[in-house]
Amino acid sequence: MGFKKFEEYFPPRFKEFDEARKYIENIDTSNELTYEAIDYMIAHREYYFLLKNIIRQFGDNNEGTESFFEYLFSRMDKCPERDDDFQLYREIILSKNQKLKIAFMHFVRKCSKEFKEFAKELLKEDNKHLKHFGFCILVSIPDDEKTKEILKKYVLENKINKYELEEFIEYIYFYGNKEDKECLKKLMEKFPEFKDKIRDVEDSL
Image 1 (cartoon, rainbow, N blue to C red):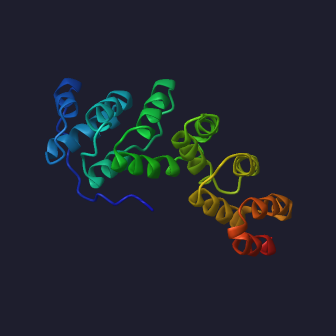
Image 2 (image 1 turned 30 degrees about the vertical axis):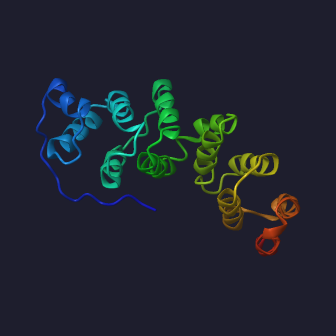
């Protein structure tokens, strides 16, 4: 699922950080200036300040609109990769705001290669939500043998849900080879209710 396109262009209104910050510290999703302030923060790489305020105002509730969060992440042409940024990503993943988390998921899948190391760390976490996000990032990386081996280990050694199983099966269908058949046989034993579907993928390799 891709981001919605935002065709309308607003010329930059803010010249200084302090002019834009008040619209980020007190976000009104119906105010046009909020979106211009987001553009300012992203243009000046103020990712931490922006995301920290998003989490503060929306992390513990389900406020905000899907289009607002989609706009926020669609404007990020670069994936922030500082340690502080990754800590904020964890906070978003563990937040209560489903709309925020869904928009963030679309964002990290778009940047899946850049998030590979972060995703590998998430798989080591005890929290199932962090693990799930790590899996979703890695399964979005196309045709990468090392990533595939990580995913195979994950699905065989962890308690995975139906969604993760189906995502993995589809991944193997597109990027698998004969060397992956042993993994699929073990999955048929682990998930006998999906035996026919898994066998179809095995036969296609």
